[in-house]
Image (cartoon, rainbow, N blue to C red):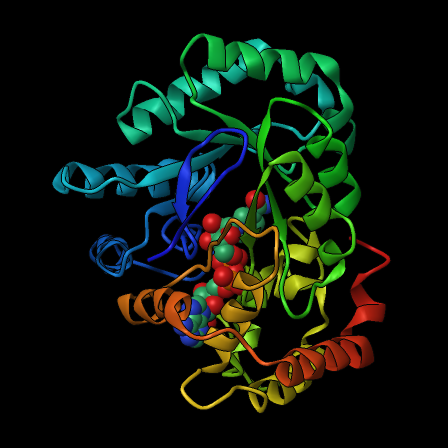
Length: 327
Ligand SMILES: NC(=O)c1ccc[n+]([C@@H]2O[C@H](COP(=O)([O-])OP(=O)(O)OC[C@H]3O[C@@H](n4cnc5c(N)ncnc54)[C@H](OP(=O)(O)O)[C@@H]3O)[C@@H](O)[C@H]2O)c1
């Protein structure tokens, strides 16, 4: 699979990576065996980038990745984790002592001396413009606790604030056919600065696969049930912030645009991959079949202008007003 470079850090990542929130919690039940088989399927399909977080299953996702990579010393996978959401979400918590403690825990969970990439996990907005935060992150690099650091953001404004900082290697952001605002400023700014863009929620939590109906019921312990209105965390993380009924109808129209040989989910991924400025896209997968199908999107041909225009028109007509003024 093609790899792309995170400009500033020089690290390489496959253009399709793997999101591993599903292996932790919040998406219904995934047992350990299934979790390991998802990692295996992704790696066998050429994926060399895993995204995790200390909070996914409170460490379970990191530990599962460690178990898998210990069993496959032949693989070179860049593992990006995140820190900062196991405490109250107040700027005062984003200080060096806490960073060291969170870093110690993630290094233990992942079984490494140095993390490849650590991302601040959608912290309160003022954190992105605090000099001391970046000084502390630079200290983690100097202490060889992390090779590089980045941020995960909710809004385009937060992304632009972080991109302006010289030590930031990557920005993780929601970007998909139902969330196009990053095209305007964030992707061009990241390209100009040599900052990697990690695209999360690329399938709008699965909506863009076109497989849900208005009657689909998700498990109780799935955020698509319990966070549909932002009850537990930012509502933009669930279905990209699109209200479910609108999303299901728009996803049916989106699915009809898939060229022959593409599933709707692959159309969604291919659309992202071919946007300049994207480094890697990290679909979550609940089973090996999904992981393999998502990886296969890397080898599909680029989409035609006609398809791109139709996707744009769908977004402008149905989705844009719901999301652009919020994120
Ligand atoms: N704040 C943050 O930094 C943050 C927040 C959210 C996510 N993330 C990261 O981004 C990753 C990706 O985002 P996400 O998992 O929220 O959303 P996503 O990738 O848009 O959607 C994942 C869901 O899409 C469905 N799916 C995946 N592959 C499919 C395929 N080939 N065909 C049909 N359906 C498919 C599955 O739904 P079913 O379960 O219904 O089958 C899966 O659970 C996460 O795993 C995590 O690593 C980070």
